[in-house]
Image 1: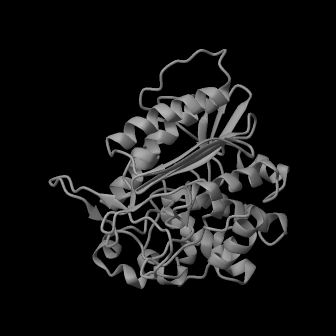
Image 2 (image 1 turned 120 degrees about the horizontal axis):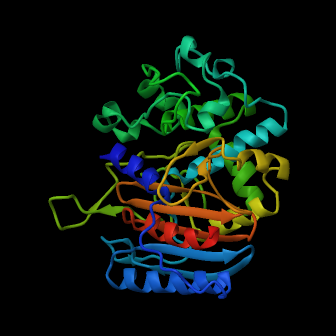
Length: 368
């Protein structure tokens, strides 16, 4: 189930749901506000969306809204500062962290990963073929640690990056690194191993100090789900054969990491977007490298999009948009920002799929 949702979420990246043509003379900010209002009003009223949204242009919030419940058991409503599971949006933080370390001369994107990761993680004959660039662009040939061992095991076992080692130490290559593309959570996890190796602190401490703190994100972290975290939304889903809600506590990791599963708020993601635009996280030259389409993807909506470094990049004429989506059982989220017109959309939901759909509709307006 988990693998299916993750793959579907990424395949949905640019399969938009009926975005209507609008008058090109209308200001983009007005278009986004109007469309967001139209979508959210309908989806909240029908209980098809539970979550939060911010649409902004640089530091100006154009639209924000919260609806639904963070806890159905206690009927606690979502508010604009409710923390939601990001799903794969954590990959953006991992990508930026790697670029920061390259700026400091602590690693090189063309290094093979056996330089940083020993054979207790992955055989040297595999690690010596894979570069950091391959991990960032999902071209490593590695697969997904959300395998049967994870699904059948206790989620309580996976709190630190080291705890995931048993899930990936037997991995083999699906193809020669660099010759093809396959979305790989294992690859992103190994980037976290590299970050810990070169920074000499935990992945979680590195991200907190160098991304959250620098961006002013005060309500973001990889929280442990068996601890009482204030104002945190629980994910909900309905099994295919049933019509009643279930929570996702026994489906997801107990603590997120480099490939996904951390928590944030839409206000914090807005701050993250501002830090990107102001080059406070990495230099403009590094952002140019990170946001380049390194591995092109085929899709129905755009001629020019693909993987950057920890981000998906879309280019259309003189506009470039970067971001990511997150999807899992009881989770859907999205963040996209234009590096040219400086508009951004942040959507977080504790329901499946719908947060992705809203993000895609609004992102289409931003890029076009």
